[in-house]
Image (cartoon, rainbow, N blue to C red):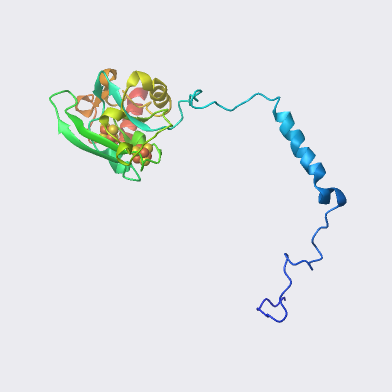
Length: 224
Ligand code: SF4
Ligand code: SF4
């Protein structure tokens, strides 16, 4: 077995040493480099005749697909925020980018965020806030170019966060298609302002049941 202990009088031969016999010798063409240079130029020349995929940003902008996760925004529905300031998004946000203060109102929703802020310097666009929101009130938008001149400007308040639902149609449709298929099954879901309340749940339901038990009960009800 080879002895790798350090001996400064007789250093161990390693792979980088010029005396290593296994190193491949370059042939003449490889040593003059010219064929490789011409190969590179030929490749570049061929690309000139292919269709361009480069956008002339910012004049030309890329329109991302609905699955894209741009900056999180608050959904404005019929002139109001859908958010009920439950705090779930702030709780789920890994870098603690969200802060809010709840206030009460006499409207059907009862609560709304008095202030709602996202520190965009902290946001990592993970989408957890959207994932946990029970009101579909915070969603990932298509905005990807954010510019600030100071740390203060990077803190987005309600004014910057609220976006009318019509402008978020792609994402809301995407969420309906892939995530929110359960709406209307157990809650009294009202499309108007995305209100769903357990208060008005069908009187037949035993409110002590878990979701799994409710599904089971519904299946049994259908089969009878
Ligand atoms: S955005 Fe959604 S999760 Fe966050 S506080 Fe509002 S209702 Fe709750
Ligand atoms: S996308 Fe992620 S990091 Fe950004 S605010 Fe939502 S939960 Fe926080």
